[in-house]
Length: 533
Image 1: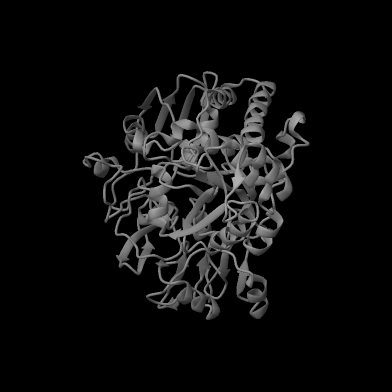
Image 2 (image 1 turned 90 degrees about the vertical axis):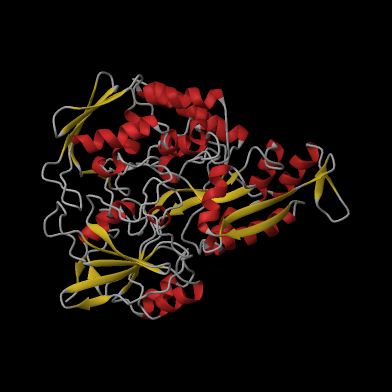
């Protein structure tokens, strides 16, 4: 059922007033005893569980754009033409070691981002970060920074100054005893599973109601056995049998796969052959998005049709000059594009130019079964136009390292959805400041253009809707004409769950969050859950 796999150390259930849910949000490779929320390869990041321990200032409802939940901050306000941001912090919050959470912790966290580029993954440029007493923090920026609010408030885990200020290199620190403000603390760890248990110091008194979350690792077979036996309570992924699985036991088996971003084939623009625009255009034309979506994504993700890469829900943002630019499946046109660019077939049928064959590798975690299936289908489609493809399934840690360092040809990957504003899609794809050096946090394709940088900056600082629309039109034009990434279909936020041991899950009728166990919003779901019985 997942893009991951699992093997439980114990099954979910309730005993002596204690409820344990088994959870999986990845392919279940051996876990790493590192819970550093700043490290992309730490267990907290790989398993998408960082907010269970390290909380943000604000939470978003990803399914209801514009809906926010005050969290460690109770209120906030912009001033000075969106160049000053002030947070009022929640009183009475303590870290899991009992020490109080104050403005000093918030100042430390963001000052760390200002001082250490490796942990400033969103490239936010702060001027000053100051405390106004124990429960208020003010940030200033040289330019309007309103669009950075999502990154600042929702995507940044707060760190305890009394612990992290003693760490010499926070970006690479191995955190085996995480101390946070979140509803859970680390109870046990093994390479096969780790257990989070209720934080007795949690500021939302009486919560969580679920005592333990057991994140499990294993093989695809063991995961499927858990699914078949209804012993995996909360998981992330999709499967062609999801609907059949629900029908087998509709009282307890459930899934919800709402859209939350764009899946794209992200090329490495610094490597042959996808550094060639004609090749990128041909690849886009040769992929049958409907077929890949039906077979690889099991029909739960629909094709992107606009060449701007924007989702159907974002079509009102598409400039009139690009409204007719559609993504089409046309292998004949793909061959013509390559022929016009000077590519000729060799004896093996693979096209080449200047002695260099058209062959590429698509790298993704081997446990992402949908992406692996997508790749096999794309392999056949591209070979039909003379491009050789290798599907390379690797570990999640290796994949994260490779895309961060640029050691890949191409990868299937989902976008940053943010709060639904197209800015977050385009910032993730086109902001070259996010791909500096060998530790990229986004723009993994290594797109670099002064035009896109200026458009992104203009959108951030725009004081009128007209200016923002003009900046978006520039970014849309880059997508249409330069194809920096190849959009495929909407990115479902996979969530499968059992109501055998817990109720209160998010749903289309109560979309307070997504049901995927990955992402900061998984904390919101965990806090809504109640034991059965």
